[in-house]
Length: 488
Image (cartoon, rainbow, N blue to C red; front, side):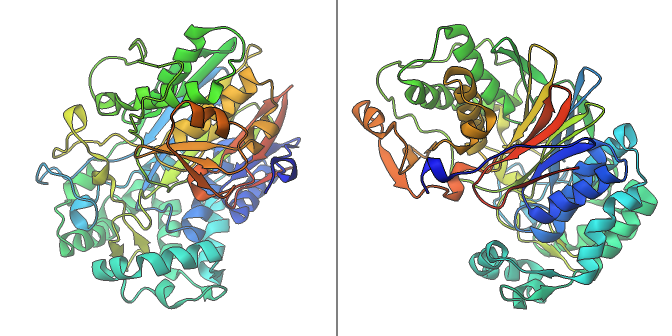
């Protein structure tokens, strides 16, 4: 698809606007806004719908990270969990040993208590309705099931109804609907203690893991201050550790310090700056700030450091409401269907975030949080208005978001055009790039090793965006993947 035919037209609304990874998630969020709900109500409703319709990407067995802007204050919500306290200090990529305490439910409840307006049962009702009534399996979910069938069958999902559904087939999730209702009624006790916790621990143990009831009961959602750096007269805010959002701030700070107008070799510099930042990924988990680290950026030639890895998953939701609250969020189980461990009594699969441990400060250890790839971001302009930006794509998140905000700043593009522009992604030493990218000749001359991909390939992300524009809620969505927008 040529850039001229890509449509990322923003929408505006009186009560609010939303951008999310699935059209039904947008509908759920709009329903909350129309009923007088806040941006956080809409975000939770949309996220719950994603858990129902996109279990390969996100679910109650996974995690939530969000930035929430309200009344001039931005709060970082860290809904992620720790590895088992009795686990061996080594990395596992799937099965029970790869599961960390799921943080999404705690993130919902903490956020709702802080900023929700509607009752939680009302917020979760759209997702519950679809889980009970049934969802027609779409092409993306059917494809993920085909690719992961053997793995998730190995870890307890052989009898999961989803595995017998073909594309277009109606899939009901009564167990998940019951769990959502219990969470709405009983809060944390419906997930982190009691019957649900015991079923979760049993499924993990049956597949080689050591997560305990105490690990679940001890879980806490963190409410933190974001990391921020100057950007184009305003501020760029990202999640603090335990996420690698700091890497985006490091690359952005390099450009801010370099100053000047748009360089002819903007793409080359972005590639080198992000690869230089990724050299410090393991140190994100360590003490102190990385923002003052001087990045080694060759302004003329590719150093081919590689660094960013080839993960693709996650789902984004961005919302703005009429009171000026803006939410930037990502939810995830990490790999497709996470660890593959299925909990039949709860109708969910569990994350494999232990696979996020690497080395150094981010080495695996019992009772520890790995560095997360989830990196929702937010721009605050000179007038104080917030714009939420988030994308799936694991290590590609930092790269995609830098391209969008840099094209807005240095190329003078509006948000819609910045989202529509062709992209690249550095991955395992190869520079993947959309075929119609105008920078291909220049990047080739600078010794980048290119891998041409069709425009819109999943590796290039799927940005959700929402914020305030002259006091009015607005939203925009990437044309890639299944992202959608709505306003009311």
